[in-house]
Length: 314
Image (cartoon, rainbow, N blue to C red; front, side):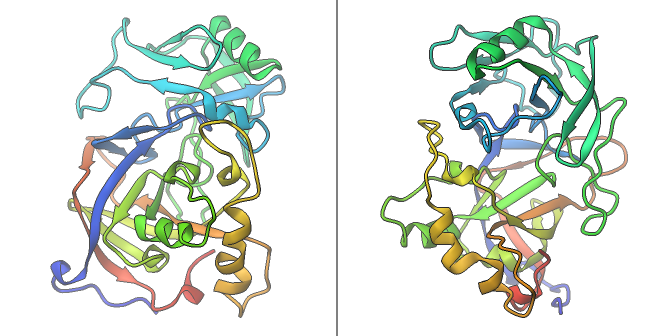
């Protein structure tokens, strides 16, 4: 059962925000931030864009590991709370052996129908022929770059875990939180330590015990409430070296030995899943649309938590 709300959150301080990340183009390289603006669908600019194949299906590093080599740069002030793009604002995209691509942040007029990512199917904004040619050349097969059309589309998360919440092109939920302690515990078991970039979190917290985040069902960061809704089931992407685009076996093989559903929740029928990180939603991410920010160094308070990983939603 969950613990009762603490009368004094200071008694439940878990750690501090060590790093913040956004990944503007899904499955491409992330951007480390000192502050990030909250929106109901995740940090501003996170997974707003998606590379799709000729059938409109979203591409990820699971199938195209070389996407990890694509670097994305946003305008200097894009992460300030009240900044809005103008006609001269661009997202800059770079990759080895490629000319620099500039993608205007002005809303494109062309619509791409038949776009799909995981369970979702809908339309998106098409970023045009120059971007299409660039990604087609780099990936080696016909591709287009599309942007989530928040004016006409929504993408609900699984209502069994977070009813009423939405995401853009993230895998399943708006936010992913991982602790430095968890990464350190994993790296102690690996012959070659891996960086946090393998796991692509939005929020990295330091100062708590390894895997403490498994138990967090409600936390407070700078007075903003987040709900931990589901442990993050990991695919093969963490096996991709983000600097070379080459896949391997680790760290998934080592994680399987102590982070599988069979180990964490032996009372349930195993599904062969491996967990690392906590999926989260912003509790008050609705209403007037006023943007809020959290920053590196912000305290993380635990308001509600489980007593054991066996109770965690998976």
